[in-house]
Image (cartoon, rainbow, N blue to C red; front, top):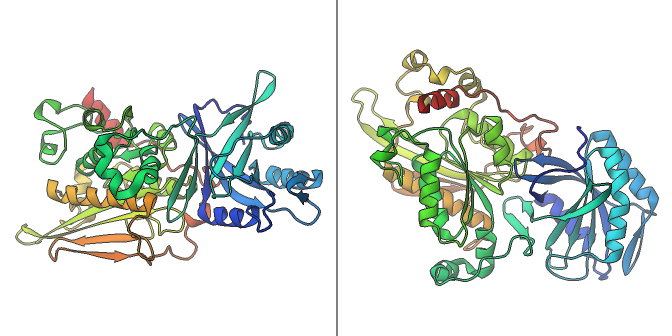
Length: 480
């Protein structure tokens, strides 16, 4: 691991798999009301603007590792053992302890002295900064990072701590990211999911990958819901055949990038006080697009090709960024060429959920075909049968509207859980011909799934599946 004394990113955050969160809460929130402590190991997730610590392993104290007497004292042997394990597997170190109070926690003088004393040896042994987390009595997390700068270790507070599983539970540092103030414009929205849920939703950084027919509608919906922080990733431009299904685009926009059109529409429709929209004119398959996606708390997959979905699958598990994906399949009669039917589905992927590959949203062989540039070779596409997947991605605005609404509803359900009856949405499949939605929340990855084994590992075990995207390079040449 390359030595990283100071992250240089604008923000710091922590992400915790839900299964580890349950284990930590059980250990730290003692029945006898005393504070307790544990160490954990983390992998770094380094975006363009944010450094995230991904907790991937807990090292609970053993007999003789600490003394509990109201508060807690840590023995040197415990920290030494943690350092040895962290150094052997190339992980960073996190100290986690509980406080006897609710909400985002501050730090006592003793807390500061203890964490600062661990910062230097932890950095020396692991080459990444030491971090601290505190758990409040209401299961609220707070966190900070200790970075070496100008000859000493400085404490920088996290903006957000995310617990990721079937649900996405964000915990915010209100001092750095204040909750939205009430406005009359939110009255009906808040009446549905409440003030607390609105504060959770509105402060998330949402990435939309692909700003075509589905992505442009998702962007509009989220802007009107009060979300303020967006990252838009798309290299493609508006073409004449897009105008019948691209929200916000006009004939004057032909030749302009779809993400820039969506940015304009978000600012125009936003109900939040200060909409911040980052536009990334690259593919998620390219390094620039990928690194910007790492700054996000949740991603909307509005793409129709296999390689971007593979990259998004990697982000959902290895980097703990839930991905809300959807797809439309339009069927035509082979002989007459007339419309026969359509189906579309929406689902969210990430820890404790089936991944995009196991659910059949892409095949590894098709990813290899795309990476080789074959999907931009007209002669290759002409040689495929009419019913081939790469030739059946036709779409119309009403279909896109329906899919976009399902994706947004998946997002609301994942963050708020409102209306929950004994479970979660799982996969929603809509059949146009019959007009009904089928729900399946029992799908699981195949045994030995590659992605389930990489949860919270960042890019340390499996490298980011990015590279040269011939479609993106071709689009940029057109735009020049």
